[in-house]
Length: 502
Ligand SMILES: Cc1cc2nc3c(=O)[nH]c(=O)nc-3n(C[C@H](O)[C@H](O)[C@H](O)COP(=O)(O)OP(=O)(O)OC[C@H]3O[C@@H](n4cnc5c(N)ncnc54)[C@H](O)[C@@H]3O)c2cc1C
Image (tube, rainbow, N blue to C red; front, side, top):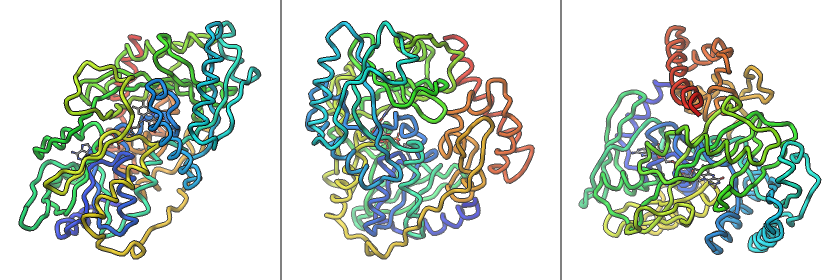
């Protein structure tokens, strides 16, 4: 995909009337896009940044039944999440893999027996479809855990997205890219209006990639803008019965001890929540925190306090404590939690349900999506597509839309990474990857797996990154060098400075 193609796409966009426009290229938007395309609808998806550039790049990547939600007695939701997890394991075995998890009880408080019963109940609630939970006291992770706090574990089975949540998002999009089913990143919805005579929306879009503004027409709009859903509805004067509470979640990534093989789940110090140590390639992710954020912007900003909390929690469980200097990368997302519109502020987000809600407007063809997780993106999409299908028929037959096979990428290597990564040129040509940051953060896991956003502890990877940047700078050395210097400044602000005061 080139900038020239993007201009060509725009001339086609302006002449079309899409069946559906989807706002938001996070997991909810893309899964919806995929299911609508599969049914033969003509669909345009837009995202104001890169696909998965919001919360869908910052999850724990677990496809799980929601063991922790049992604390709120969300039995029905947990059952549904388990069903969705198992279905994904069956139908998407390329992307979703079964994974054993290990709960580590703190001994001496009778917690082990209680948690064994709870995890057993969880397994029953999930229809006994995963491995039966069992106690284990001989396991490799014990070697680096605090021997005074840990002497046993309970294993159970969930699933995990591979190789990352951001790639999971991309996988839904890539098969449907043709003249009438189009996904555009770096294109935001700015406003619009509904014409009651033609019964069509006209939507104002702004494309920051080619600096273009234009209007497209659509019969239906689906607002799947994650934590920005309320803001998008406000722009159109729409008021849904739900709203979002924003819950910030931060992880730190540390170099993985080779003995760390399966995700470990611990209770937090105050016993109200759980935190996990998740092996992911060369790092172990630890977190997440859970705190209410009053704006999306604040939610996406990591504070030194978040890192201190995570280090304190982790060091209770480790035999050898770690510090800020051991942190390879930071990771932050904002959970969109659906509550009633009149729900009072000042709530404790841990107590809020993780159920999604779908709100079709009564008088205009517009659907808003609230909540939603990686784990239940498919049932959510099927429900929304069902509503659209009741109102309009797809313009094309379900079998007439060309679905491209996703070929295996061309592989490359990165200094000190054992895992091969898709090459920058491949991602630029085939995967709508426009910037160095898209490549390092979402097409590959380099900026999460290699210290300081891939630059290395002492900038030792700078020359390699300048070479990569050329793929996104039309092979212009000066532009590539400037891009990397801007990237380095960003890493100083969002990583080095935070850790320096932790
Ligand atoms: C720390 C953490 C851990 C989590 N772990 C898990 C887990 O293990 N398993 C699980 O199932 N779930 C997990 N979740 C939940 C899950 O990640 C989120 O609920 C999910 O990613 C939300 O997806 P979304 O599509 O609604 O939002 P997003 O991914 O935020 O996507 C919304 C998109 O809308 C775009 N947008 C906004 N406004 C506009 C506009 N005007 N025009 C165009 N585009 C716009 C944004 O750019 C953004 O890309 C976790 C969440 C967090 C924070």
